[in-house]
Length: 105
Image 1 (cartoon, rainbow, N blue to C red):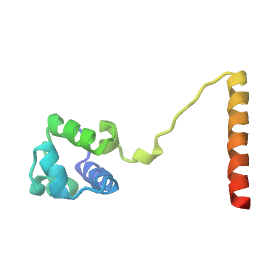
Image 2: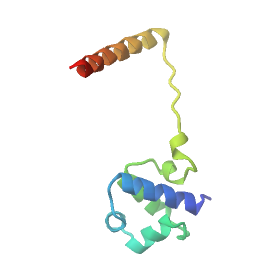
Image 3: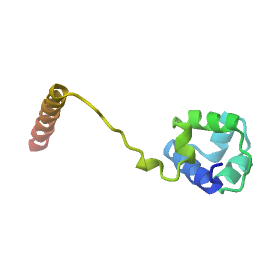
Image 4: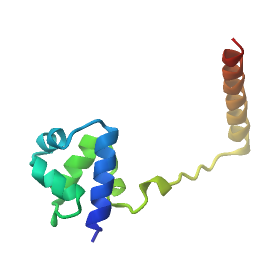
């Protein structure tokens, strides 16, 4: 079971990032503004999976990001060969040179 306050906090943050009002999101996912408000306040119990999926799709976030205590703490582990690492290093060096030249102007 997820913590309703965590869901509410994440929902509100994601909604604001997308520039949506509660009313806009509610209409898009088939809920009322009042229900969205209750979810964001952590007071709406039994938010159906169907609605959580619709909300996550509308906000363009993974479902787990809505229920994670710290969704920003996610990390990516990249495993690459030495040859690919060298290629990436050259690419990033080239990008850094381009930005340096732009700043000189």
